[in-house]
Image: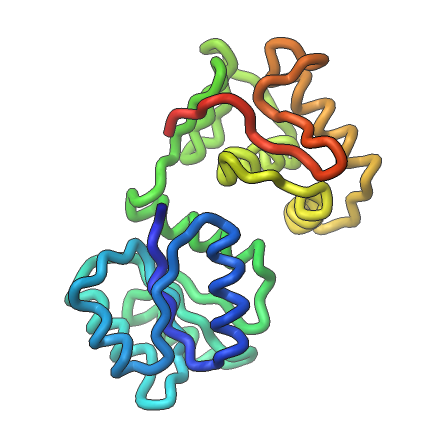
Length: 227
């Protein structure tokens, strides 16, 4: 389980972020001030930090330096809407990414996973039932033969790979595909994409072993996967 160090003084934002990150399988340590964050650094073992730039007792830039001195982990800044100067400053001092409030939850999770992969804290290769997915190169192979997925089929596969053991509702999948396509994707379209993906990756699409249907709820990744 990956550990996130969240530094955010807004209680409501922090509460919602913690709920979101827990639902995505992350452990979260939360601090609401710079002083509290610094005191919690020592003895902690986090994999990534989400740091609000504006804190009641300082700013996230100086905290960034403290975090990097303690442990070289990726840092993503949370910034206020339209605060271009802060964004530029954060990137100039070496921040790995930034995201502007209010942000879409799926976008934040995607950026967290990208930052973790860049630092080698998240596996980029997955194997499951003869299927091989290299997330770094975007290569997908079945029984050592490369198969070609459309952008949305690949995005759909990554949702399952990134959420092993979790039941994923159709509503969430629709949200994920909408984010990727930039256009409306309805229930019928989702059904078609699931069918097409199964035809390409399953040994027997009529009796799937990788993408399982959870009746009345959605889908989940089946079998055992190897990171």
